[in-house]
Image (cartoon, rainbow, N blue to C red; front, side, top):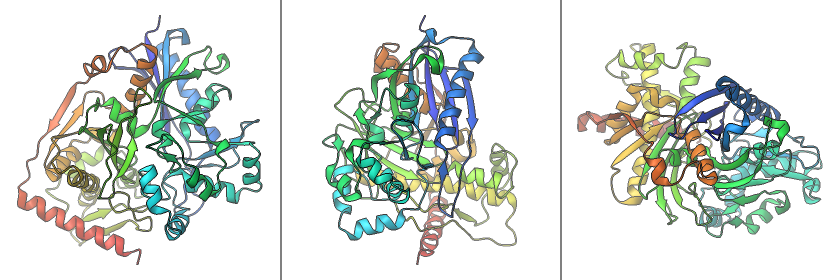
Length: 496
């Protein structure tokens, strides 16, 4: 009877549900976009109830499209936008404020204060993260400080905090289960990734009551069961991982040294480092990888805040293209970017720069710059940003990468992947199934419920669609990279 695994993929701009069979193939999908709220420059919010309602509706829709009932589901795996912060009433389930999204920069000054207070090194050592407004801690503190009576209510045990995975599980179980997994906990800047517990010193610094934080469990584990009123029956919720760790797992990067990049709203490059929590000397994060037990694996991560979002910007704000797919043809219609560089630092620069005050900039424009040149420059920027992170990883490891596995929406763009291969000077591999984020969540849930038997069982499902090999001459590669570095320096100077 149990023929499918359901993956709930709650992303930054849309909620999706994908049903997978035992071969790891998507057999039904539904997707719904939801509103992005921008109260001020650099602020990004979402309605938590809309996150939940959109996710619940696509789950029902995906089952309906396939014509199945919950009795045919072996389990549910959840993957989610990370760091996004939600606080809600423990009794009513009503959020006390909008979700503050990972992209939001409102707490950048709070992070500067943290550094002035001498907490930065402690946070790096215990959480593996570079102190930044990107993570949940300062967002949660902001809600407690700015919503009337919130901190007092939190101290009384009336409020709960969760990242999006916790919010979804709480709603799927009608408040019966309050839990997160190690990967999402490791992105809050409140979790000791070595002792695997909430860090009391950091909680005290931000004045966050520990009682409002969820229980932390492995990424592959039966957390609880859906209430019958939600999906029409009880289904085990058996896997959860932040989107990037889920993609690393879905790409079958189970061994130390294996690397993937997801070209989503942002660009996120992760390297499995096994049981060793490698400390980066080049601005990368040490984070927890999706694991099957209490003995966790770790990963090095470089986070680029704007990747696919730059293409959305070309489409929605600049109105240069009507569809993202057109960018490939436009980029290939010209031999180069005509000296134009786009630095899409719309919400600051992430790894390896970590400057929240940098802003987007365009350099090298002349009268000869056409729409095609501009579009090509925006696509090239995604590859340049990714290359900056990969270079940092190579420096930390002391060796070049053998290959780069890619996924995410923009990985369909052949121009981008060829340019990535040229600039990074490495083989780029795109699998047949690029839905690796949702697939990773499905695998985690399937392993916990016995739907999938082992990691080797899963590895047999991975199939190559296309490989891209470097073709660019070294002198041209160096010239382009030198131009990019100059453009980034100029964008960083905006902060001065």
